[in-house]
Image (cartoon, rainbow, N blue to C red; front, top):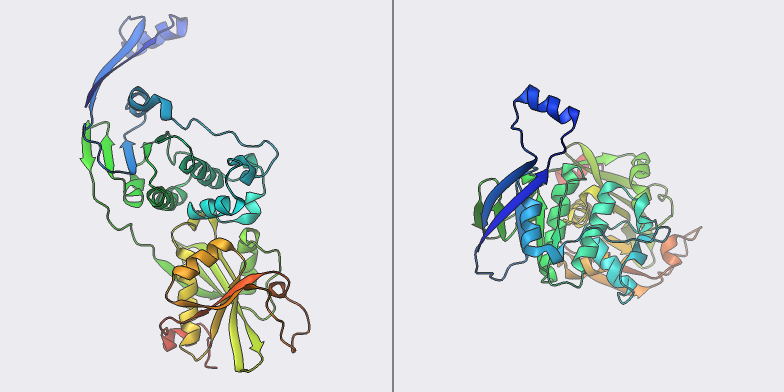
Length: 371
């Protein structure tokens, strides 16, 4: 499919324009014109994610307007004072909204309660992506894709978004001047505007993420606590670990000793697991939690995760490394507990880690000692 595009703009004949023409030897015309051709294949096979990429001013938007003008997501309306979750269609169940936001990498329930305009650029970016996924139109075109966020959010957000688009069999076309999202987005096709070149692609593995794992002080929790779905403070005596990505704190976990009647030695209860918004949507939190659990297990500990977040439950239910230990309900407090804890006051699920053991040498490095 070949399309001819013509763009013209009138030039106002002002004194400043006349001076610029003199300085740069510009032609004396009353309008600026540009013509070019774009070529896309007629055969629209089974695809989900398309990317039109090129430098600013190369004609991405103009071309897309010519072809798919009725499908642009030109900015969704959000409640001025209401919560972000109220910006979605009324026929969407709140659990569906929570799952959708989580799947695009925006899994910070405290932020879901805030108005859209109070969110960070990265959070607004992901919330808008979630809206586009449930847009009732058969195709959605998103201009300036990732232009307003830093490159970490852009790359990881692209990966989370594309995965959810394919999961829901949605079709989106993204326009961007950033080439660094290609390997993370893994589009089914790319059109390079400056080269007038179309490329059909097959899915490949996204780039690897290297996580530097360290034991840390409980004070590190203050960075992560605003993004946890509970307001409870960190339990006393918590063993804390943090994962750094390119030197930046990305994911945190804390666990405590938990006595259980009839179980000699008790268990290690992973009570906090938080992945910061910039790194959400690619499974980093779950992978980090499994790594930490494996280190405790190799030293003879029984490891349990307890949580109330439905999206987390869905994730753990699919993992062969975790076994459901208790269906959703309120945990029974141990007779030895002097104070009540949050998980005895609300309905939660409990999963035991049944994956492979970690390395004992590494466990000792992190002060994880045998039971």
